[in-house]
Image 1: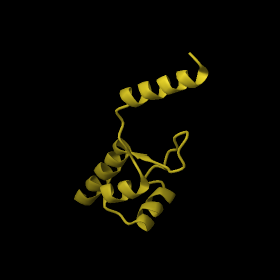
Image 2 (image 1 turned 45 degrees about the vertical axis):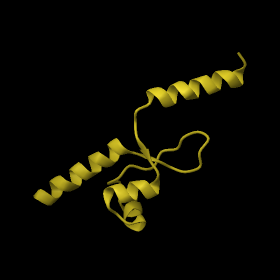
Image 3 (image 1 turned 135 degrees about the vertical axis):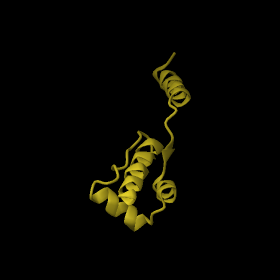
Length: 80
């Protein structure tokens, strides 16, 4: 098996086993109900995590889990 074939197998296994949902910035903005500018401000001030990079892709992504944590925190602040 060549090195290229090994990488293909590893990527396929990773995609199969990795159940974490990744959202683009556009998808993340829609998911949390914020404009892009507001989303960027929340990231800048640390309320939302910075986007993550995946090798081979230019676009940043956010995990659904991290966005759910932000929404929970935001909801608990509204109740106070």
